[in-house]
Image 1 (cartoon, rainbow, N blue to C red):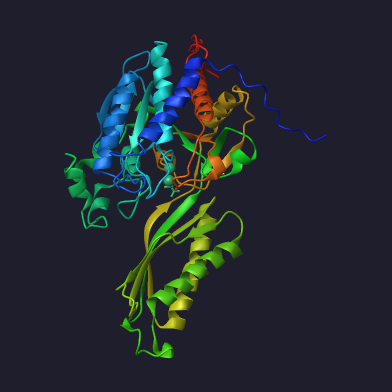
Image 2 (spheres, protein in one colour):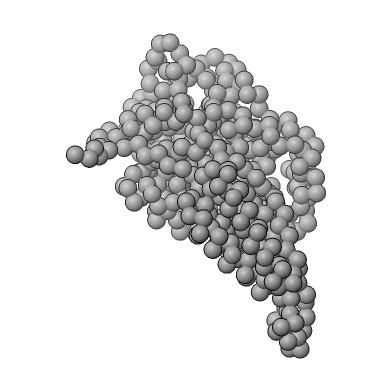
Length: 442
Ligand code: HGY
Ligand code: MN
Ligand code: MN
C-alpha cells in the first residue's frame, strides 16, 4: 500500500506563539502603506529611498523591542543582534529583504524579517541564551527594482561585491548608486566593510513566502527549500529605423517594436519547447521614441532566464539569443543582449536543512521539500556560510502582486518551527541540552 506522509495532530500552540504570528502579519501589513511606499498607488519600496528609510526606522524599533542591539552596516543593511550565552559567540543570521517590486505584495521579503524578530522576541521573553548569537538582517536590495542588477546589499555582506561593480550604475532617473548611498551617509568605495568574517557566522536561515501554489495545493503551511534556481538577467536593445507611420511602406520598414514583439514570442516558444523547469520572461519594455505616428526606432526590454541547474539555464539562454540573431537578420535590425546578472543555482546546506525538516515535522507538519524558482538573498549568502530556507504558504501562490496573502496561523507555525530549528542548532553545538524555550520550540 502506498505510504502517505502522515501529519501528526498539530501540537498545542501557546498563546504567545499565536500572538507572534498575528504580529508578523500586522507588521507586514503596516509596512504596506504610507510612508513605507515610494508610490502613492500601491506598494513600491526601492533601495535607499525615503520609503526604505522609513521602513528601516520602524523595523529598528521592533528589533529593539525584541531585545536586539541595532545597527546599519556599510551597505545599508539593518542588523539586529541578540547575544548568545557567551559574548562574541558566532551568529546565526536570519534575514530577508525589505525592498519590493512595483505594485508589490506585503509579504515578499518583510515576512522573513518579522519572523526572525519574533524568534528573537520569544528567546528574549524567556531570557533564553543559545550557544550562538542571532542576527536578524533586513537586506535593502534583493529585487533590483531601482538599479539594473540586484542583491547588492547581501552580496556586500557576503563579501562577494567588489565596490568597483557599483561604478557607473545609475537608476532610471540617472542617480548613481554612489550618490544614493552618500545620501544615507554611506561611501560606495567602503561598501566592502559590510563583509562578514565567515568565522563569526554559523549559518543563514531565510523564511519566505513560497510565491508558488505547491504548499497550498498540498494543504501544507510550511515547506523546506532544497535549493534556489539559477538565473540570468539581460538588458536587450533592438535598433531599427524610426520613420513616418504614414509614408513608409510596410516592406521597407525596420520596425524595432515589431522585431521586439517577435523576440518576446521567441522567448516564450524557446522556454516552452525546452520543457523541464526552464522559465524565461520579458518583464519590462520601453519603446522609443514612443509616438503614435512614428515607427519605433529603438526598443529596450529585460530578459530573465532561470532553471534548477546552471547548464540548463545557460542552454535555454543560448537558444533564445540564437533566435534573436535570426530575427535581427530577417528584419534588418540590430539586437544586443547585455548580461546584467548571473546567479548560479545554490543548493541549501544538507545539515541545516535536516534540522529545519525535523523542526517542521515537530509541528505536526509532513515535511515537503521543494526547489525555489524565485531568487532570494540566500543564494548570495551561500558564499559566506551554510544556508537553509523555510517556505510559508501564500494564498493561490500569488506574489509580486497586491493580492499576496499569508494567514496569521501559518506565520505562527513558522515562528514555532524556526524556534525549534534554533533550539536544535543549539543542541548540536553543545554537549548537554539546555531547557528549551517555554512551549514554543519544536
Ligand atoms: O526575481 C526574483 O526571483 C525575486 O523575487 N527577486
Ligand atoms: Mn523575495
Ligand atoms: Mn520578489
